[in-house]
Image 1 (cartoon, rainbow, N blue to C red):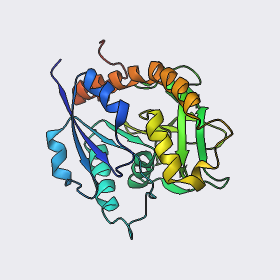
Image 2: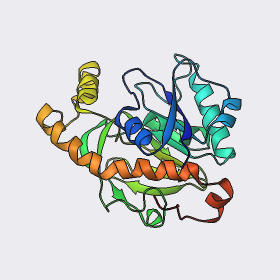
Image 3: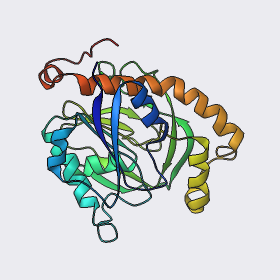
Image 4: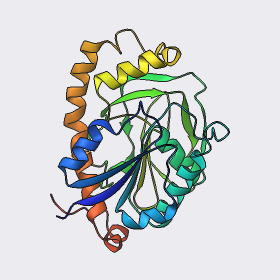
Length: 250
């Protein structure tokens, strides 16, 4: 398989593509990483087979402080229209929802922070990206906002008691995941230091280095294969993505 070109947008320096980027590269992806505020125009998508938007500490609609957020939403909207495979992580998922008719707001119960589980929904069973996951995969949570209403026609793929819309698909191949799988213990500890008020919502021991080391070892076993499936999805011709939920074998 030829290497698949993917555009990666990092809204924040403290939320890099991390281990997800390593997994994608090992599976055959060539990543072009851009960091806000340098957001390319929609025409740039013609050069890529997929778009990935990562997380950040700002809100999805904080345009007054971060005017480039409108450019990211336009990029996501265009990618969905083109049926280009998309993966939005945390803020990226919220931007995907906001750009396609969904709604984002602060979590009423307060921040969701720490290591936890999400539960797959029925629609995920036949999904080419998340279908093979365990029923309750491990994830890392660190967010103040949530998607309170999915875009019209979107499929809910995973949920949790704290936040209903944990993973969803818009159209054929645009995915949003509210949680993190790309982190390392060092990244999470950096977030805890830089956002102490948010980190205070975690249960005791959740952000301890030893716990994070053990957790991330298990996280890789579950989520590295998802990165490989995303690369294969991006390598699949658009007409085949429209007509089938199946992916070519590795």
